[in-house]
Amino acid sequence: MTIYLCTCGTSAARTLQVPPGRRFDADYVAELGGIEAASDAVFASCQGYSIDDDSALRNKLSAEIHSLARMQVGGSDKVILYGSETPDGLACAHAVRRFLERARPNLPCFVHRIEGLQVTDAYRFRTQGVVNFTKSIVTEIDAYGAPQCVLNPTGGFKSLVPYTVLIGMIKGVPAKYIFEQSTALISLPVMPVDFARERLEPIRPLLERIERDSAIPRADLDTAIPFDDRAYLEPLFEDLGKGQTTLSPVGFLVREELDRPSGLVPYLSRRALDDLIKLRGINNIDPERYLRRVAASREQFYRVLAEARQHRRPLPGQQRGLAPPRLAYHRPWRI
Image (tube, rainbow, N blue to C red; front, side, top):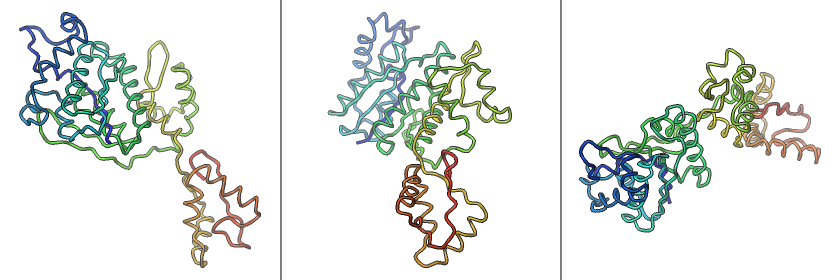
């Protein structure tokens, strides 16, 4: 089963007959009788087309349906459509949901309304919409696991594309989309991306405080971050005005990843490296294997040390008579 996480716009209304001089927007949805009635009208305008018709996919059906068809979505998969908070966006999202459920029987399809996704207030879009979108996507990835998920930013706001791709890079989820009227599926595979933890760990308490309190005074942020690091770390924060600062979508992703358990990075002094080279020459001793084992996680590090102390025996890879290993866990991400 593949979980398709799709941004959703209003292209589903492209076949709806709108009076000349009018466009499908919130006012027109209200004239039709509300979101449900508008969704019925949009669905009725496209239900006569087939998801297996190449011409219909390119010229009649919505961007979301077109891209999912190229990805070969099936009844055993699951689709989540991220719609805007606007009436026209929600009406189209529900029309797309109904079309997919009819075209692919047994396909679970859901619409998530994202507060703040709209086109009239850029400030709300940036400080609420993008952040709420990011949190919602990450929740699904954490629930189903990155290997089962695919990000599909074909429909909806084009300004969400870079954020969607960034989520994919950080969370290890591929992104796939179709560009405009093309029939070719563009894939952005998972890339080996990681954080510069040594520069981010010192501000972990600050990130946790902002997450807990929603916002902090800008003066507190400037006090906590050295002047030389401010430009480097600025993308993690978003000014709310009136002297208040919160986490940006990038900051939210960074904070979450810093909390996620990860392996430790062994740092060796010159003397320790010389000892490691000597140990390589002793039969049945594999110092690199020992380092990989002890650095697998924080818990594994303490478990190995506790076993050695309890049984008063050499650590794995240490011969009796050799100097004790000089491994000391002194920062959250390294030994």
